[in-house]
Image (cartoon, rainbow, N blue to C red):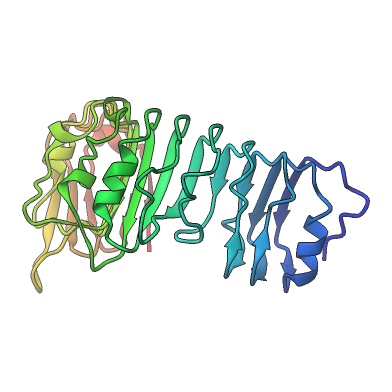
Length: 303
């Protein structure tokens, strides 16, 4: 177990491959009152409760690498800038806290009853939200309070359906300048895939578990600024049915493409499409056809 008695002035701590039951380690962290950066990676640590209230200068907190049953994050610290955790580990703080410096918040869950006053996150640029109570009204209201957001990730549990207001989150004051969008969840059957409704500045798009019934490539190819596209189990076909993802035009600046889906049989990229592509990741059973000018592309089979 790490001992921090002789490192009371430590400002940066990145723990890797640490194994501990948790109780004694919590006491050790209480000595590090000057920490600005704290990160856990591949740590087999399980805490029943973990409070960071004593870290008054903490700016970056990454707790994705540990297991916390009852995280007690002190949102009273106005120094926090970047907070990253596993989905649903933390709830969105109430409206009384001061988070004026917060720029990154991934992932956080929406409380069952979201405060109508909401917190002020004027400088938040990256947000990841896990919605486990299907409060889409509260989610939309929250998005309307984020004037600086450039990266948005929303994940819903499998039984919920993403409404059109979430698929195309135009409630965002900075919607036109949104550069990264990650959506995990089933789309409503009345919501169509329409490239013109996505933010025009979109560079990175991740879609997962959408439930599409047809090839999404023709429409996604219209996103002129898209450099990174990830499609993960987006198809929902009838039994024994398969679909071919044919890319016949578009994707002028796409550099990274990931396609993993059991419902996809072929990925066909025709000549002149995706001229900037350098990296391709596909499912193990997808048949791939690339034109001669893309034979140099690094291709990885994803199991």
